[in-house]
Image (cartoon, rainbow, N blue to C red):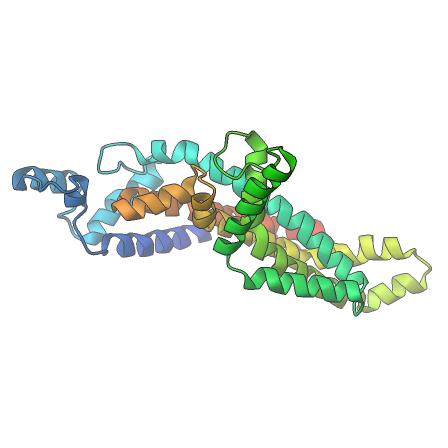
Amino acid sequence: MGRYVIRRLIQAIPVLLGATLLIFCIVFALPGDPIAAMFGDKRPDPAVAEVLREQYHLNDPLLLQYWYYISGVLLHGDFGVNFADVPVSQIMAGKFQVTLNLALVALLMEAVIGVGLGLWAALRRGKSTDTVILASTLLLISVPTLVTGFVLQLVLGVKLKQWTGLDIFPVAGTFAGLRSYLVPGFVLAGVSVAYLTRLTRTSLVETLRADYIRTATAKGLSRRRVIGRHGLRNALIPLVTYLGADLGNLMGGAVITETIFNLPGIGNQLFTSVYLREQPVVVGIVTVLVLIYILANLVVDLLYAVLDPRIRYE
């Protein structure tokens, strides 16, 4: 197991380098002058602008700029500074916690609701319950996240408060603690819940048709034990794969949700940094997201052996 983990971490290095180089080239190839953007409507003094370009290596070739950046990240854990000399790690510190909280709430909702509805639909395949669940998930997939966010914000944040007089579901900021993440978490997880529901249903239906399930049933095992211990456990492998990959997607896809609900997270910061052309901040955020995605996939691979003892890594 240890050798497998080390091998996977080594394999992750070219993935990290390739992803960061790609985003570095895309961000720094955007038209416009970031130094001029620092001064807003005022025109910077040419001598001052030239000094700033030298300070931030903007006059160097793109690959050399990338080398300065990636060597600082890998050797010193230094993500650099933005064009106001504020460390990028300091900018990301508190904001990543907000986005991580949001992503974990969304992932929990996705796992509980998605697997629960998929299990319910699989056990009632072909019945009205199955049809309603499939239709509901199709509707959830079809409606854009932007629309879902504004509708829930209006209904739960405004109308429900008018009807009951209670602020049950806060829909802006993080002032209410965990409750602040409930509605944004559902909006962020909405499409993933629908996909996971369908994936759970399909996986479990296929598993229940397997020969070993018929054998377990013929031995006289109870339906609950057949489904829980034999059917669901084997059906969980593709679900764990989806959930592990989706953690990175949830964190990276929080831009719209955090903007709608005014959450001071990394998605909101990413949007602001792109708008202000703060390339070091954009690249730093994407680098951390790539690392999270790689680690999440490594954890998923290790969980395979827990779910299926036939899988070995050595």
